[in-house]
Image 1 (cartoon, rainbow, N blue to C red):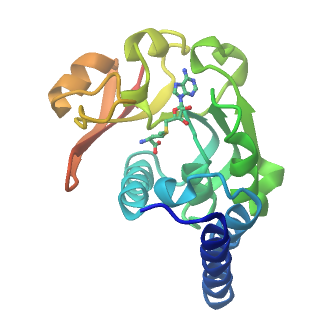
Image 2 (image 1 turned 120 degrees about the vertical axis):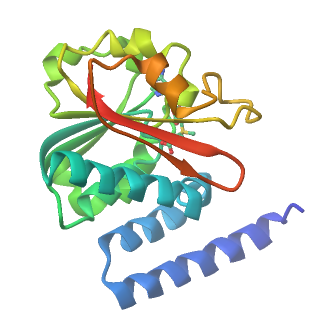
Amino acid sequence: MTSSPSEAALLREATFDLLRGVNAYTRSPLMKGLAGVVSRHPEAEISVAFNHKQVACKMWARDAVFETLGGEIGSILILGGWYGVLAAMFFDDSRFDIDRIASVDIDGNVGAVAQTLNAAWIDRFSAITADMYALPYHDHKADLVVNTSCEHIADLRAWLDLLPKGTRVLLQSNDYFSEPTHISCVASLEAFREQALLSRVLYAGSLPQKKYTRFMLIGEV
Ligand SMILES: C[S@@+](CC[C@H](N)C(=O)[O-])C[C@H]1O[C@@H](n2cnc3c(N)ncnc32)[C@H](O)[C@@H]1O
């Protein structure tokens, strides 16, 4: 069912009011950022990027990072970062001490949204529009490189080969083959390990969801 332009505007206003209320009640900079996105970027599909399944996958990533690497992370480089939800969730988590997060995406429409979502931490956050296959990784010197969009890129191993040897990485993929934008899904955690061929694996796990299973690896290239 599609809504008329005026209905869409009313719905957006109601969502904005609700998120402002949630922010007033929780005093959460992340909720304030979400309200800002709803108000300033009506075209952004933030309700998809911040739905309960996406949030669960990113909370799982945060917990696994904390358990395997601890909270003193330094700088994080996120590839295929979309609207910057994972960056905001890392900044919002008081267990972590993070110097900087750069969120890279090939889509020129998402960077401004990521900046709005991460407004509370803008001195430590940057959104970059670039192809992850064309970045000077040896200059970035990130302490942790994150790619939770592995199902969206054509050749995971070719991308990993661009990173300096020993780089710490967190990777997520899934077995959601029926989604047309998923060009590189894997059937199992074992298949994901074989696809990534990390030199050291510190964490490997699966998170079953209703329609698919998400896989995660933390280790070194
Ligand atoms: C749907 S989103 C994120 C999905 C993932 N499950 C997540 O929440 O992290 C996938 C993102 O990867 C980006 N992307 C795809 N190929 C890319 C590339 N070569 N370089 C940078 N970003 C890329 C897309 O533009 C998109 O924003």
